[in-house]
Image (tube, one colour):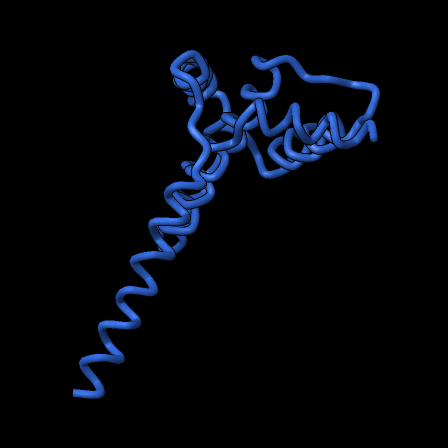
Length: 127
C-alpha cells in the first residue's frame, strides 16, 4: 500500500511539473513561424555544406552581435542566425548517428528562439 501511494505521489509530481513547463513555453507568432520555415528552406543546403570552421564563425558572429549593446538585429537577421545554427544540427546528426537525439534537441532549442526574448534581453542590457 505504501509503495502505491509513493508511486502515485511521484507520478502526480511529474505530471504537475510537466504541466508547468508546458504552460511556460513561449509561443511565436504565425508570422515568425513562416519566416523561420522560409529561412530554413533557403539556408538548408548551404548550411549542410558548412565546415566546422564556417559554423564556428557563424556561431561566434551571432553571439558577438547579440551581446553588442550598440547593435540591434532585425527580426530577419536574428532568425537567420538561429535557423542556420539549427540547420547545422541536421549535419551533426548525419555525421554522428549516435548523437542524433542530442542534435534533434539542439535543433528544437534553436528553432524555439524568440525575437521577443531577444528584444527583452537587449532592453535589459541598457539598464
